[in-house]
Image (tube, rainbow, N blue to C red):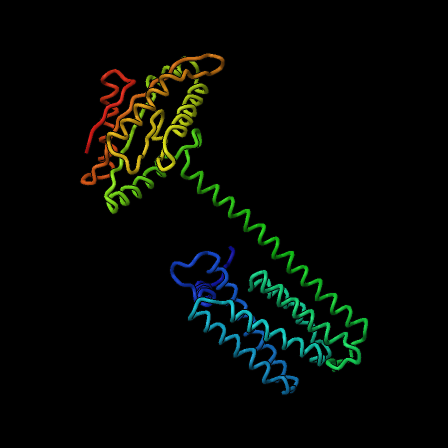
Length: 367
């Protein structure tokens, strides 16, 4: 049986990494804070390791620097936890860390291996900071290494590195920087693809696949928004519910493929007839619904009659066969004294009356 982390450890890590996240923050802001807190945690642990090493080797000269590194990580964590803004804490901590490891590189550190941690710095830059900030820190690090290794007379270098080793250290740091840049580019590409997929998923969730119009759920959300706005601004809102007459006969006589084409044809007519601020949706089967903001019953009735005339006067062609379509329409001006479902029910009652009276007509009801 697989074992995961204990629940207590997971809760603790979530609290540490999430310190500073405020309600209402976007995903990018939360990720930036999580990554910053992770860096502070790692730097704090690294400072403890360095302190242990200095104690074991009885090298006390670097004690103040290691303690400063530990204190800085705790201070930056506290600032981010309080403000939720990791930019300056990241710059100050990583900048200070870079100076520390440049000093260790120049002095050789323990056993002449003080340069090793400089290879980690580029990845920390790009992990915790924005691209521009990370590039600036990387450039500063490379300039610092170049000054240490390649100034004639070696005034800044106390360690006895050979010229060949200096070149290799510098080139290795450049390689790590390039790898960090490529990793950031790959992450950015993946994020862009995910964003596109999320937008497509959100769009498909509110769109009818056959007609490209809004689906019922998206329409109801839009209707709720517009009714609230109409109450606030004291503006009328109207609804048109329409149905393709004898649609079953189209499917039976010409096939369901032709029926689907007829529904797409109806969607195209509605899109080309309504205003930009209006909303058209497929309500179900061969039924469609229109939301008309800032429109009285009279204005909605005019649009409904225009739609009816356009459909009746435009023969539909399918598989080289041309035949006419007609629609029945029920029009209702929204009544804020009734529920949303009740208002749609009023429009549906008008549509039913239009069918009862012989179809291919508009029936209206005022609130």
